[in-house]
Image (cartoon, rainbow, N blue to C red; front, side):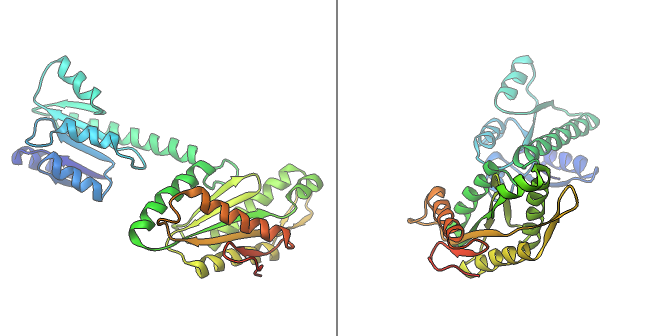
Length: 302
């Protein structure tokens, strides 16, 4: 874990760095709040240890900015100050600080409070992970994937690189449930999730959009790259099978709609892009299923 230390006193900053580094943490430092904030805009730090009173942007203002930032994940903040008294502690915590340590600090107490911060961050990560995942498949749920699409739109608009979207739907899934039961249907959903993981890159985002419908976000992917991923999934599903609870072989197919988008003046909102891909999926379903359709074409592919 990387820890950002912020203090305008060179001696105090060097002492904090030395103590924290001894325990194996990766430490970087800033001499005031303004510099620290610029660093945080470039890189996320999970923990910030900051002095309160500093020239320019002080520790309280830095913490308030951290709390107001729309960043994924949580940043744990430890406020260190020579200010004494119950009211100062309350003011510091009300500003958004997670913990408070008085100067001159005790080395063991500092490390103990950092350890507390780590436990809080691990718990937060676990809760966020659970809240973002579909319980059956382990894929992102709809809300989490929506957030990933929103962030990727912002990044793509800056980079000038397009992003791919794929929507997939299992053909005749109701028939699978009616014939082999819902537990077997769940096996089909899990199997498709595995196929999608194998067909995509480690930094792509796959989510269960709802029921038997799935969505895939492909950062930095153009139209042809997105098509190839969709076709890879379709082909893999067609050639594989799943065993039902009773041991019978379940054959299935999947229909997919896809498109590549460059967020700009035309694609400012998520919903129009998803609607286009959904329309392509509908085209794949109504023209025979087990096929891939582009939202830029009415001609089925595959």
